[in-house]
Image (cartoon, rainbow, N blue to C red; front, side, top):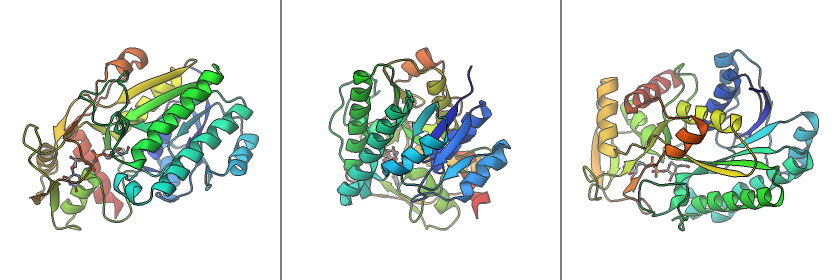
Length: 333
Ligand code: WQD
């Protein structure tokens, strides 16, 4: 296996930082470009602490072509993993232009500069959101349906842009990775999911309730057609997700390849709360409230393609996700 120089945009973020750790532990070198709009510079130090290797870090906005060009001119880059982007579904409804500009222009700039410097490995951080209200389990060959929000549309549009660029230049190899619900943290407890402000997502909200920083979890609806009426999702440990990126990079061939990165298992909100309480021996008070607009009942993956083509399968279960998420939160403050 050849060791590569990988540009990781958004590498100071939740999934990006864990992927940097997995890349470096697999023998690759990492250059991080991140504007720290939703992450902290100290995370770069934590990545170095975990791996024992150095990381080149640029605090930059990857929608700026000249800035991105400078990085490619300075470094011999073998591949890109593009995480940098805004990712809050609700916020995207309130600020569509910011989402379309940031998420799509960054993808176009990176693809353009990659072609200029003949960098032909591009791994893109996509999302299960692009499936819209398809029937579960979601399969890569499904026709994508309109999503309920600008965030999801930016992912679908970015996928189409990268697909068309690859069609125009077959050497330009693209891997589109559709994430389900990333949760948990590196076992060291040094890096994890630390959203600014009140968390939108379930697991960071649960950990804040467990820390008694928030009074109780509001469960958004228990009248869905699911095992216990609450929303069902395919939660995947962030380190499994990170290792999936290394597998995708190492197995990248010409053309465009789409992979679901999930566990294939659905877990309800109440099942996750119960698992968290049992694993960490802590109570998480909750109240059933109205459904959240835009939520779907069930979302989980068919993961057979990644297993078959990348020889990758999620190794960690819900209990480990809950244990690692809690360990990070007890260390974080
Ligand atoms: C999970 C479940 C909620 C919070 C989003 C994005 C998706 C991806 C992952 C980027 C749902 C319920 C949540 C709370 C709750 N992000 N919930 N109370 O909405 O499945 O996916 O994050 O790629 O694109 O859409 O994740 O964690 O917000 O919700 O009851 O306070 O937990 O209704 O059933 P979601 P989530």
